[in-house]
Image (cartoon, rainbow, N blue to C red; front, side, top):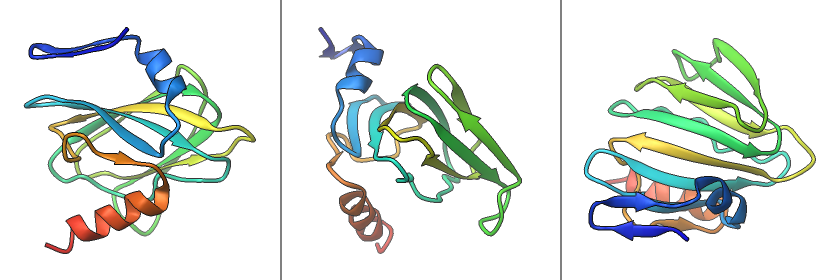
Length: 139
């Protein structure tokens, strides 16, 4: 059983990730770090992005994917296959994308340091997430 406490978060991260049915859900937000879980359908991708002010850790729990990393937005410098139990650390400012390359859902969790999304965020679909990002970045 997971617990969001005043001192942190305690739970079975693997089961929390595997049970997730949304594109993105913020599980916990602390002062310096945030935990999210994600589900991508076959062929779906997170979307090309760079976070200038934060580092990101991504771990695949189930499914097959590839991560694309680059110094510039236009062309990835590196492409790596991902499978269950594999992780990626993305340095602040690095362009990146995760694409589900398998026939099944991709389930992963991500740690952002510092937090990236508003606490309590739930994006049921990628379209919902894209709309929220467009609104957030139009300020």
